[in-house]
Amino acid sequence: EENIAIARPYVERANRAGVAVEVELGRLEGGEAGLRMISDAKLTDPSKAQTFISQTGASILAPSIGNLHGSYLSPPNFRQNILIELSKRFKGDVPICLHGTDELPDELFKECVSNGVSKINVNSWARDPYVKALVAGLHTKPFPDAAEEATEVFAKVCDRFFDLFGSSGKA
Image (cartoon, rainbow, N blue to C red; front, top):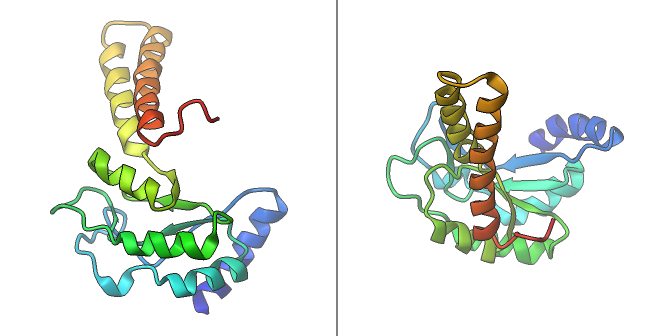
């Protein structure tokens, strides 16, 4: 209830401006909080998700399923049952987003998609190769050429993920 009260005014303001709001329910640990270990007590409770979304007015849910922000110190243990239950409850009305995707194997991405995830944040997967290509290019090329090459690297990463997630040709 406290989280709903905190989130609601921000969501309402964004909604008035026509901006979709994505919320995390539970707690994803990792790089942003300086923590690494996952605690089941911080996983998303699907029975509370519908109430949270309806009472905040948020548009997209990013659940905590054992994922974390930053690098995994041990192999991820995603609780797919949470995704399955959320998918049953929302019936496609609320997109489910996956945070904490650094270094995940392709098969885990596919499993999450098959269990209802329809939005996946892959920031560092695409950003890091882009920055690396841009920095390397700036040593030998004018900025416009280096930026163009880095953008091509970024686009190739995105194309790979479009194919992996089954979304190629759908946008």
